[in-house]
Length: 213
Image (spheres, rainbow, N blue to C red):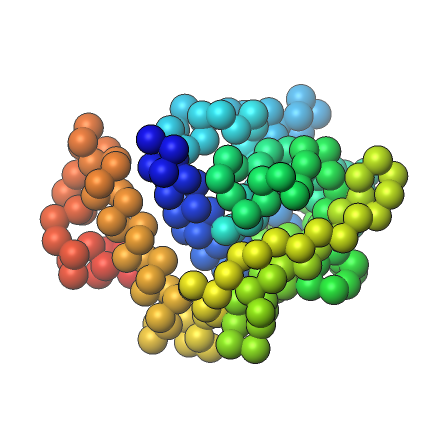
């Protein structure tokens, strides 16, 4: 059971790394924060996210979930760490992630209601560092700087290089995109089609990939 949970958590984080990198290339605002705390106070009933105490930004294969605060736009506040992820035991809830890849974040997040979704600021810079450490020239280690109890603490996460980096033509002719897409298709087929939620799409491996492309 623990192995199944571990596999799902890593897979879920890996899938969302596609979204993370894609958003970083758009360079627009991330989310609108309303006066009642929305969207961070929303919860999901999905099996993978039912224990996550809010609707947070997923930082890819690290397993870290964060939110953004209007009064501190140059950092990300850690709100949850997925069990079994590489961040478990190294990152703590309440940490402020202030840098990645050997440098502090430079650009502020752009929070707005009517602008395009994207990764300007800490989210985008984090995505670039995560991508770089998985590239052919990287070592699979993501170096972070967090503020914990008003102290700067360096943290290294061993994210590995299993997925590699995106090709210049991604998502086309891109081994990383193909690997993530295949894992996503297999996950949906095995876990989410029993009640018909994904029925009609999951009918064959090659057709699945064509649908998701």
